[in-house]
Amino acid sequence: MRASERAYWALREDIVEWRLPPGTVLAEVEQAERLGVSRTPLREALGRLTAEGLAAPHTGRGVVVADISLENITEIFELRSALECQAASLAARRGDRTVFGKLQQEFSSAAELLRRDDPALHDYYQLVARLDSAIDEAIRNPYLLQALSNLRVHLVRIRRLAKDNPLRLLAAATEHANIAGAIAAGDSQLAAAATAVHLHQSLEHLKSTQQTAERTAS
View: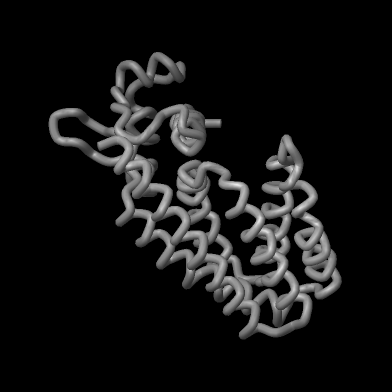
């Protein structure tokens, strides 16, 4: 793997996982030493991250990890709605109904995972990832798949703001079950509508969480 590629993936993961939180200065000398690369490949990596919106130029400070604001979240969800509703619609027309029927059953049982004293969040998020993968496979559209892949990088960052609220997770499990069920039934309009409902509820929860955090900080 080229040095610039290695630096890019290392920085990308650190940003997505919040090991480098928003506003962190990505100083060339410091990051080059930390990642064991020279400054030229590091600049290439920073250029890619900036193009993807994970980093941003900052006057007098070089490059910083991009901030996440309510405006950013709303804009990302506008794009997410367009892409994911279309993906769900295509999956209902092109996907294996048996696969989505099984996923619907698993989401219907997911409350068991989430109601434990120690909720099995990893198992639940793995289930969500399997639904995403099943939709990705069903749509049979590489261009839409690439757009979804690029978008999900930002969604992983944003999800950290939701604080794993138990009531929201239970509601989301039901919403995911509805999406999987609509795809299993081959109803493209219902699949898109169920996805739109899920995204609306997710956005409202994120906005509420972020507004509360901002009030607390001030």
